[in-house]
Length: 347
Image 1 (cartoon, one colour):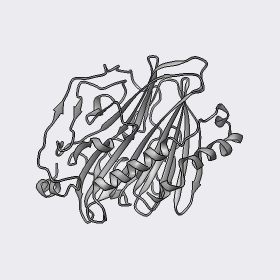
Image 2 (cartoon, rainbow, N blue to C red):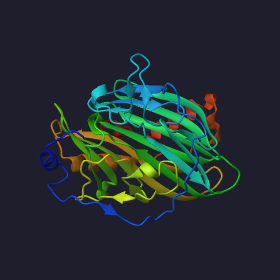
Image 3 (tube, rainbow, N blue to C red):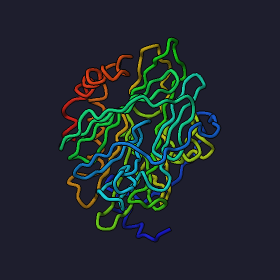
Image 4 (cartoon, one colour):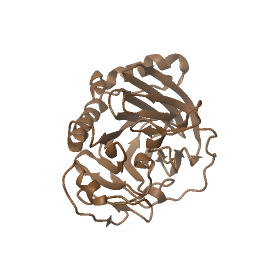
């Protein structure tokens, strides 16, 4: 593990000045359900779409909708780079662990680039709605049993944020119970796993990891969940393939901080029942912030991004069954793209 001036790095945290570092281990509120090995192996190579903005370069897998692809020209990994460059890759490094779990009625499905898939999960289609100098919009659709998952990414290219709207629709003929969604984010800030500090900032439902990056300053990578997750787990290493949390269930609410920690956050949503044709929407915002270049504080940044996510979240309209057919994709999904709202491009 490389040596750092941790005192200097902690003081740089823009949320507040605090030197309290605690680990909170609490009872498990959801019993874990361990799965068997993945039913399909990871793809080789990882294929998808790459989008580049002013501050960010991202890569999104084109079958199951998570971060992490290989550049078809250079072969280098691209998941989430801030600043732009392989040396600053924060998701497609080490364990490519940005992914998710979907479950209902005791059936479980998951995907991560390095894990592969589990369950009767089928890729449907992907579509670049737009890729202009100012904004990229991209949708990936996959089927998980009776749930159709739409992963709708919005990337305002002048910002350092990516908004992911996950839309889970019941395409079956019966009501689904115990619908569940977990998003997994394995931040390795500046390609340095094991030296990050982690915390949870409850006012904005944000898991934050930060580290000192040479020439850049203190870089904070965060993921915001909206609506508020039912729980979060900074030690999701043992619940990447289960419903609920594993034996190592760790929380650390700010000002408590997990120091020099190789974290992996799981955001958990218990979504209840889902009638045929109905849907649930979850927003996760992936962002980065540098103490050296920012004109605002991290808390102000999180506030602005969270407000945008909340304002636009309710504007997503229902996706009909016809949206799964190529001829109807432009009509149905353009309505969603419009419904998200223009102000996302300013954040």
